Length: 205
Image (cartoon, rainbow, N blue to C red; front, side, top):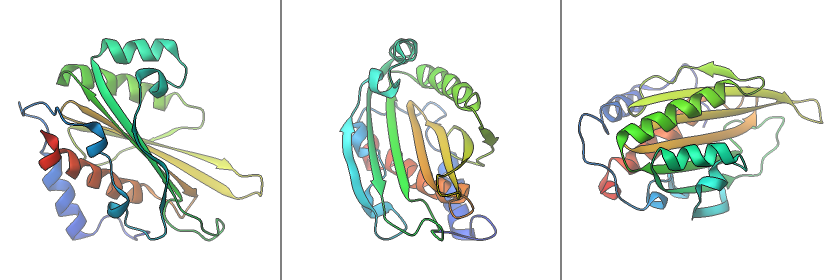
C-alpha cells in the first residue's frame, strides 16, 4: 500500500473527480449507511480480515460514553450510522501500510446538521493529546486529518491517522493504525476516496 512521492496521476484524477461530488444542492443521501462503508474487497492491501463486521451504531456508541457528545449528534439530526473494522497480521517492525482500519459513516437529516457535526468533530480531534493537524487535499465537501504518534511497549513508534470528511449529509471517519513511517496519510486518503465512491454511486439514494 505504501506509495512514494504522493498520489499517482490516476489516483489524483480520481480524487479530483470525487471532490466535486456531494454538494451544490444534491439530493440528500437516504440509504443504509452500511452500504457506504469501505468493503474488504476495496482494501488495496492483501491479508485483511473483518475483525468487526459492518453494523449499525447509536449516537451513544459513537460518543464513546460522552453523554454531551451523544446529545449533540442527535441535536444535529443524526439519523443512522454504521461502522466496520479490518485488521491484518504482519511483522510490525517492518510493516508498510495500515494494519488496522476502522471506517464509520453517519447519515444526518440535513447538510447543515452534518456540517455542524463535522465542525464539532474536528475541534475534538485537534484537541486530542499529541494530535498533529494535517491537510487532506480534495476529499468530499470538506475534510480534515490528524495523526498521533506513540511509542509501543517494544520501543517502536506507532501512528494513528484519523480522517474526518463530509459528503453532502454523510459524515465519515476513517482511522488507520500501523508502524510510524510505514502507515501514511496517503494510505488513509486512498481508502477514504474509495468509501466516498460508495456514497456518490448507486448506493447513495
